[in-house]
Image 1 (spheres, rainbow, N blue to C red):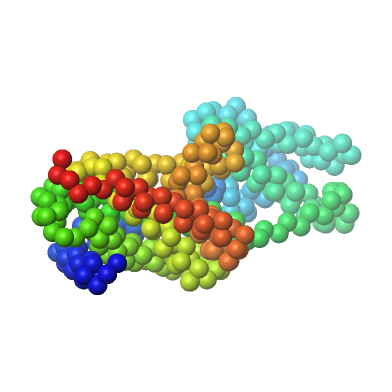
Image 2 (cartoon, helix red, strand yellow):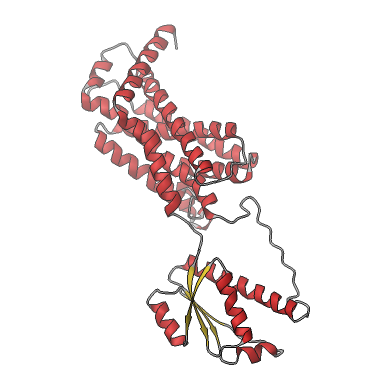
Length: 374
């Protein structure tokens, strides 16, 4: 690019920057929209089960039954409700008032003192399979803790032959928010990044200023560069703002390097802005461009990025389609940088995929752009 071309690009970039300052909608998309979406999703989406309503049925009160039931009162995962009969508890479950029932039969105390042990009835509402699995695991935790406490109180050796000491790495508090927030950043920035550039060229066509640009000596690649750079700066600002919200508002630990995160975010932003430019060159109407950007970015990123749904459990053709979704690679990078640190075995291949996607989308935008009025 020679000196004259650089001056033209600089002038077009100044024009675009002034247009951004005069029209606050771009600033709102870059900064306000990610903050609002991150706040809404961050507080509204969780995979944790807290204060799960649980029905407790004790047919014959006794010391052992009371001590076992008290374990659920002390658990932070359950909100126990006492029922006199199993039928009453089952009616409550059918009415969605409780998600599970723990049923201690009349001879629980006598059988518990015997060598055969006492059966504990556990009925779980399986409508929500995820919550059902969590409730099952939490009930087993309470049961194991009660068995160990009773064995210690009676001065006998713990009857369980195994000494299990689990250690959770990278997210020791097992807080789903720490896992979801980094993925949310990728999801939201996919939408806002594509929206930022999806509207710019369509806006020129709508206002009739594209024709004026075409009669000037400026080349199409110079127009695209001038459109890309200011929105890249805006997008990176929104990205860093989202990272700050994740760290300071939601308390997500950032174990990796902010430099590495910023470099990968720049690659991701180039890919999403390039996708927006492709949309903008095809649709010459801002409303249509916005709709296309919403459908082709947010929904695929939500379903095919691995943000919530495990891609390894999906059919092969779905996994193949997911390879063109930039958020898939950025979600893996963000979750690694936030929770595990700079794990290069994760970062490098995903960053390389983002480079390829950015080159494809930017090259496609250049190929589709034509200096013609038809």
